[in-house]
Image (cartoon, rainbow, N blue to C red; front, side, top):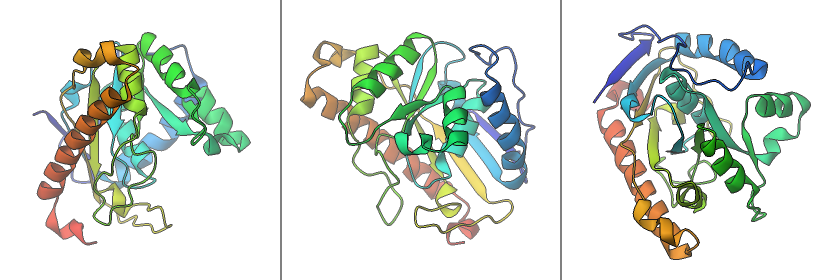
Length: 248
């Protein structure tokens, strides 16, 4: 299993953007976000990335992430950027209400999701992005986990519908440590050097379900397997996470 350590106490310098970084034009808003957020994130936290060899260097990738806090998108995005790819998140529509965030998210190629409407637009937009060779990021739980131990909840079926319609594997990407940084209730823990660990699992092949792409039972079977693997990855990270930080 490959590992990259960086940040406070890290073991390897942060990999620069290079030829492997797949680009869709200049995208100044993306460059603005990357140049503004990446340096302080690198400096403040002690990052550990595992399994990044499971992120393809090019072509489509559908990445399913666990959700423990509001800090998770930054952690998951940094992992993908470290793998020399650009993340395209399915982001809740509410984030687009303010002018700055709307322009930032739209300019950075993120995909709006109107939650609770049943709209197929996000699925279709995600499938289109995958067809263009993008890395599409999704939180199957749809919100920050409500479990007291921060483990994954039951997932919604959007990631299954996207995977089967686009006929691509699902790559599970788990984070641990970010639940101490910025919680849903407003609690923050910005202690310098806090470890943030992110681990990508092996791509999960659901091609056997493609002929049942419109079958709700197939959707549920796929998402249950994805959430089981995310839970396994979270349990692994949690078991190895530095004990001195576990209750801080």
